[in-house]
Structures are given as structure tokens and as C-alpha cells.
Length: 230
Image 1 (cartoon, one colour):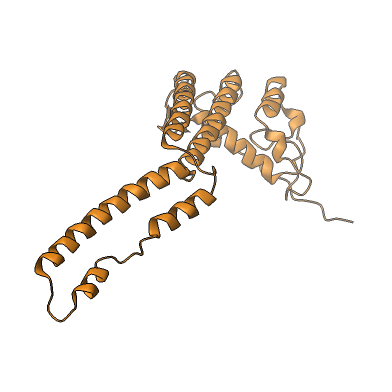
Image 2: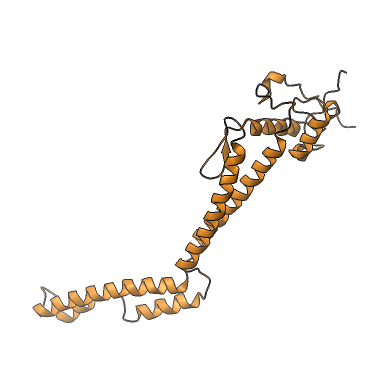
């Protein structure tokens, strides 16, 4: 027979986040908060996509174009150095052939080797133009959603939207997280102060479902709901 779990304590109303602001007991804000959380999730997803696009490897064409440009620059430098060496016909302590070969650190087929290696990669990468196009599209979607988010957050005093699309300073969020944390401690459904779900009003029960509090109610949670004294 399993040991009886200790009852969860009842939180005084003035210790519940948002009590003074009228969040507790007045749940007309829940739908707006749900919309805020959905937009935050969508924006976070778009930001992840953006980071993935920026992290994609360069396409073969871009790599080869850059390699050829750098190779040509090195080749021109080598030609200039060789020209100077030939103009003197000799250098102190070294034969002319040794000097000339020393000016070409890479073998003559280095460009061909690089081209073969890059071509073997196939079309796994992304071109600069395509990358910019995808990022611009994602940026437009992110901007539009952040605009909607700011419109919603403007309805809550003290809350604001960061550049990343994350809402800060939200009493509604603080209240929701507080309730979820209370429920996370208890193996039975409870209201935001820790009282049994059975004591909750219809509006509070609807908020319980809408805010996803039930997701944190699990039989293995350490405490039980306190029996109502009423």
C-alpha cells in the first residue's frame, strides 16, 4: 500500500501573480494570452528556420567562383615574384630554379584538384541568391507576426515584445506559469492557489483547460490536493 501524499499548501491570494492587477478570477484575458503564446511559438519556429538557412553550406558554384578568384590572385602574385627573380637572374645562396620553385608553394594542378573535390559534393549547398531570397521571405513572415504580437501585447499594461519576438513583462504569463508550477507539484487537478479543481468556478475550469494546466497534472507528482473545508 502506497504512502499517502502530503497535501499541497494553499497560496494566499495576495501572493498569486496578477492578483492585484485583476488577473486572478477574471479570465477574459485567456483567449488573448493563448493567441500571444501561439504567435511566440510560430515566431520562434521561423527564427529557427532562418538560422538553418543561414547555416546551409555554400553551393558548388559559389565555392568554385571564390576559389578561382583567390587562385587567380595568387597566380598573379606568383608571376610578379617570378618576374622580379628573373630580372636579377640569381639570388644569394640559391640557384634560380630553386628560387622559382619556392615561389610556387602549390602544385600546378591544385586548382583542378579543388574543382574535382567541390564538384563531387554535388548540389548539397545553396547559392547566395537563393539564400538571400529565403531569408528575406522568412524575415517578412517574422516581421508580420511580430506586428500582430505587438498589437495583442498592447492590450496588457507593462508587457512588451523584444526584437526576437519574445514577450517580456507579462503578468498574464507570470500567473499562467505560477499555476502550472502549482499543478506540477500536485497529482490531482488544482486551481491557481492550490485549492481542489472541484472548488473552481466554471470560468476558472475553462481557463484551466485553455491554458494547458492539465498537461502538468500527473499521478507521480509529489503532493495531493488539499480537501476542501467547505
